[in-house]
Length: 315
Image (cartoon, rainbow, N blue to C red):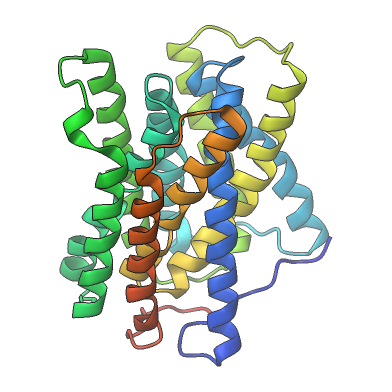
């Protein structure tokens, strides 16, 4: 199996920018479908076991890919922090909290709340990474977040429903955890490549999630329906193994604010697929909110080439 293509830093030729954009597009499509897939898996498997099992599938896919491509390495000590942050904050905390929240919240609504991440990334990137927030980028963030709020519609929410409050609170906390991963990934001085490290991130996440599942949930049923089995296979191989590798490359090469703004397209894809596959109601406001999100992405995207690239020690 050949090694996935490497994207060069943002100051490289135009082809590298297209490579980063293509990877971001892949993440949006893969993770948009992931929400629908996880909803199917949760019909047969409890939340923590669902994310633990999909992560183990990802390890099974990644290990031979790295071995056959000659990229299987022992992580250098300098990259241990980024392995820990991506694994624990994104693969474990974000995935576990989101999946738990998905148990109580419709897939479409969960997607909206999960992608409030730019609310936390923008000030953190400005404060810790010294990334400037230009006017077009501010406008893009505001448009995107307004689109998300229009989808969610707080005025229609039953604030007395404690189960719904718990589910939505878990998902908002997940978004904060993801923002930590995005900002640190951008700041880290890389020695190895994201492809070389993704196996170790996934392996650590699989171990931690399995321990949590053993501690808090009953043993899983392994007699899965055909739909749940196929959904879990997709979730592990595409949504987790390839998805997290691609997102790490994007976070490494693109400004943190631009990367978090770009993934705002995921809710549009996810809600549309939830309606198409799961039969969830399509609110007419979807078209307007989707337009606002896409307009926000367009407003922020031209700034990618102008931002100062983050310091790094590897291509």
